[in-house]
Image (cartoon, rainbow, N blue to C red; front, side, top):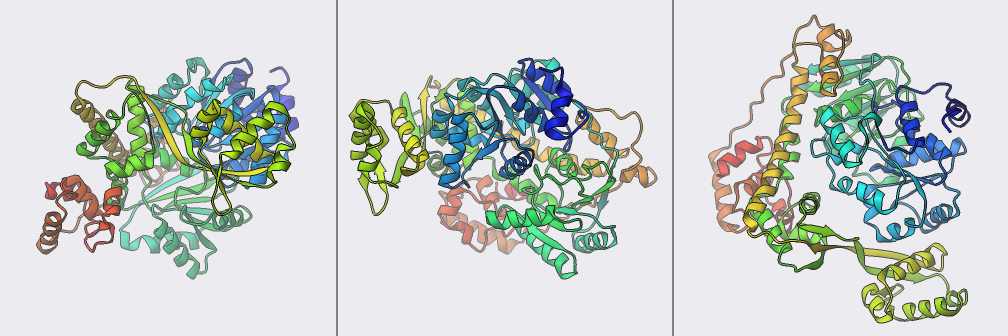
Amino acid sequence: MTANLHDHLEQHFGFREFLPGQREAVECLLAGRSAAAVFPTGGGKSLCYQLPALLLPGLTLVVSPLIALMKDQIDALARRGIAAGRLDSSLSLEEHRDVMQRIRGGTLRLLYVAPERFNNERFREAIKPIQISLFAVDEAHCISEWGHNFRPDYLKLAGFASLIQAERILALTATATPRVLGDICRGFAIAPECAIRTGFYRPNLTLLTTPVDASQRDGVLLARLQERKSGPAIVYVTLQKTAERVAQRLSNAGLPARAYHAGMKDDQRTEVQDWFIASDNHIVVATIAFGMGIDKANIRYVYHYNLPKSLENYSQEIGRAGRDGAPATCELFAVGDDLCVLENFAYGDTPTYAAVLSLLTDVFSQGERFDVGLYELSNRHDIRYLVTRTLLTYLELEGYLQAGTPYYDNYQFQPRLTSQEILGQFDGARREFLRQMLSRSVKAKTWFRLDVDSTAAALHQPRERLVRALEYLHEQAMLEVRAAGVRNPYCCLRVPADIAPLADELFQRSMAREEREIKRLHQVLELVQHDGCQVARLCQYFGETLDAPCGHCTWCLGGHTPQVVPAREPPDIDAETWQQVEALRREHSELLNDPRIVARFLCGITSPRLTRAKLTQHDLFARLHAVPFRVVMQRAT
């Protein structure tokens, strides 16, 4: 099968040669082995599963957290005559049905889904009978707690791959340190010889770092954009409101600039993305939501208006420049004042010890088998939703809990045909089963509600059969089905003799994560101030050694002189403000009873309880947003 790989490469993708690492990864997969590919942005990771998808007999299932990447790749594959589709919440009923019919008919070669799709029991039941020749996991660094973007859903992907009997796995990332790559290989059972890492170094990128004062940053950015030669540019910012403000300022100066961020509607984001891709001179001012998987090789400039969150984020974002191999410039404006906002993202995710103890006490009082709504659990214990999921995942990995298949506790449907017309298309036992199932639904205004659990019990049928039946009727356009209210079932395997030490262990684990995130932020500043080739230092971080200085970073171009980022001088906490804080703490003594919660409130970090108590609307909320979190927390102790 591997003998004529070059023929297939040219026939289907128009390339005469593989990029470094691609052939090795493809050959591992075609030999029936799982593989990992750590290639830089623009290094051709997607071809490592797209080419095997055409040569393997079954479906290639691609797991990606980015809808934009899915859409772009599917459009590109369609232009090459390769059948690919996606399943996500943006699809209409007809689009969803068409994709499922193509999967069952065997005409779809690649299916793209987000990792959260496996929490959908309708999807899991529908995909089980399908032959999955290749299970490709993009952004695979998310499996590692030592990575910069840990996501608990990724810890379960190996289990899902086993559940659907995937024949081989491909894990892909552009940003894996040696430690993270080790986690990826252990998590997906990938042999070391099938972990392929290519060079991180990009000789066509000029990397500039420029310490500036916050008050001067807009002017410096505007000057750079006005002085530059023509070419598409991305300006990365941290906050949505910053994207809007900076884009407006550039536009007012006569530059073709528009904002892009997750707070915009889907159609607005699509319009901006298409506008940018079609141009040779447009500027997008964007949060990190922009750029992942966008097929635009001629981006000539990437500016970091704000500090990136980590060296991993930085490398991904600069990697979007110059993918055509032509020279490109990346410039980072280093402003020490940015640290407060970025640090708050990390501090806001760390629960208090009391919150962790409350969560565990709740979970271990539920009995041997129970189900929970994670949003409800998050709100009840004042722990952010993603952190709640992460803590429960830790309990699974430590053998305290075993998670079942998440399910919806609320199924609704709207008939597209009459009951007689639906039942008329079935015979015998299937017809009787559907008649009994549909007869137990209760009509509201236009939608019927079906309690799947009670109906399954009454009909002495497994719940899965009812779910599959609803899915089939949905695909055949007989019913429009929607589901809500995700419940997560668990089996309690063992109860700790004493919950307090376990709570402390998980709290300390959360604190360690916080420390890692803060360290990553400061590694960015260390790169700016590094007394040596900055490109070589960045390569070293990702496990690569340059034989000589690059010659095209600020240190190399600036006479081998290190830079200095001015130290932050946070504002003082005035006595009058703190008197108001103490008065509010007395008024809300039950809620503001922990220095960490007080610091969250004053630094402008939301939490479920602060929102529920409407304290996010209080005049003191975010009053000290410019003061470092730890300074505020120390004052509140």
